[in-house]
Image 1: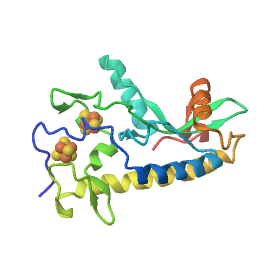
Image 2 (image 1 turned 60 degrees about the vertical axis):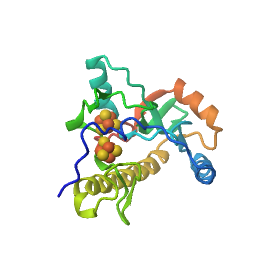
Image 3 (image 1 turned 30 degrees about the vertical axis):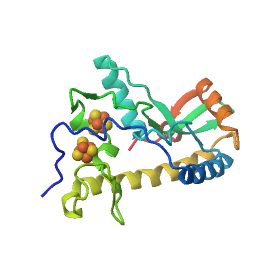
Length: 205
Ligand code: SF4
Ligand code: SF4
């Protein structure tokens, strides 16, 4: 039997922010410092804000939000800074909201078009299976989570493609390396934003 959400649950749609345990915060800081030395920067609140979007998803939801008059802020979640042309090359985005702007009247209003990360929940890691304990359907057997596991595997493949694309991009320009986070954010706001796929001249996935 497939995994079914209880009617009107919406826990994952209304808890997009989270507390980060101190040991996780320390390892994330170290990981991000190492990436900054390579020229890869993260939005300051991306650790505590969970809903991440690919460039293609962000573009799609920007369009839906504009069409419906929904206020849906999005921040570049991970980005590179090309200094010659003053470009912020965005690898992915996130919603800096505690509650998803597309959650209304206890329903997802973009359900058939919802992002991959929503399709994967509560599967956080597919192999070995790791599930978000806050989801009321957990524990659920792997056999009930085929759609979610498939979505999580697709996210893993997309992340690998982004990592590989970012490395190719870093070979194709003059990028700022090792900036302090505040300076990187300041430049990202001033530079022209371009999606990684557009920078590489590729179609978004
Ligand atoms: S995935 Fe889990 S937390 Fe999210 S709406 Fe469904 S049952 Fe609720
Ligand atoms: S897009 Fe839909 S499923 Fe995803 S968090 Fe928003 S309301 Fe929930």
